[in-house]
Length: 636
Image (cartoon, rainbow, N blue to C red; front, side, top):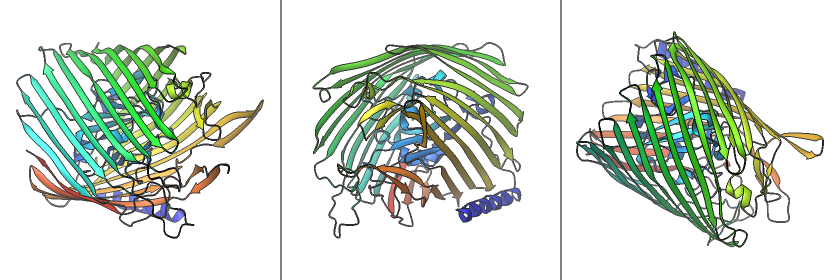
């Protein structure tokens, strides 16, 4: 371990030395505008929020990959299952928290899963990367701006919109390992006061066996567990008046997948069918350049059907989202935002409790924030949200987020924020649930600095955080029940560096440390404290090097390290649960792209180049080993 750390430190110093010997190349992002931090366009220099942007160029240079693959390279994020069979569920761990604490947004609107099987977070397998323009990742508790689930952070997926001419086409065709095939085709354009974007994506693969074969089997004949997916997206922007723009949208995705019976257990008949409809309308009204009024409405429906040796499970979850808010520039340095949000979740179920019919919960949440914008370098956000919940009454959350721009080379920032999260419908009403569950409450603290060094060729950011939670809800497999723990305490560190040592050469390094413990009272009056970050490593890091070799040729390579962690293994009944130590592993990926015209290119993507199969992502489940994808993409 010390040897690996020394090599990483030496590599970083060598890169910095190389950077100091080159001509200046700007990498500063402080003047770029983002929308996720404050729900309206704001320069990164004017907010203390910790935000990472995955640009359209980075996504274009990730052809043949998935949204989960791209997120898995970000500091503080671990996508458990990213290296497993393509049909295996992807669990997002953000700063040590499970996916239920990180809402996924599409263009600022939450894409929820009311079935609760993923803790209300959307299934990442339903989101193809072909439809994405960029991704903004907001770190830390954001319940004031984004509601109950935003305890660990927020991932906002900005979809592609209309082009700059009446009609243009774009798409790709990709072939890969395990008989994989993906194709996408889109049309986008703008004519007069209307712009549009329409896209269809199909993906299928035979995959590998989801379950790993036990060592005791000499000639295992585990079958492949494949997946087929179709996705369609359409959005239309209508400039109805000089000040009013409307954008109706529709997103549909479905997949069919095979899955196995558990760790080390093959199954021939287990299958799942899932689909998502996400539709609604967004409206923006301009207040003569002084601010905007925004209105959002969305409806989502997710249906799931699982067939296995245990029987058939049918789930139908529906979510409703409505929001009206406005931002206004009171002075050049003082801004305000106020709004109100309504959410409702329903679950229709004919499986659990034979049947229990429709279960629902809803809340109305007014919220407001005041912003000081770059007043002699000082910026501040003060915000609060008052959530009126149908089951859990009234709850208040707040945000205090100061930052100071020491110069155009250094920004320091800090934040204190609180969060509130109600139990999901599954946790409350399923056969595994309990209507006595209490809601979760969180308080988060973070501080850090962002600096631009070596003539702006090095962009360096470091953040420390601490998150305290009460009444954490967890599913306990030993009892097959959801329960409340007393307290959860997580802490960590994130370091990100972007370096341009030479023209055309970009280097990105990330490192994240996270540790977490839960305190629960197993015996009245006596606390028991233990680490409960199952499948979540203390240490993760990535090194990505991209080089524009010529005008036409681009190459990149990514080295990703995942530290040791532990898993919980449940062998066949009646054997007790076992705690299994999972060793650290390092994977190497590469990407090559040749652009033979401004409108078309070919690419090759190789993952796990060393064909490392001697590691576990999830104990008892297979990993892909070496796999590749090659294809062509175009824009006409």
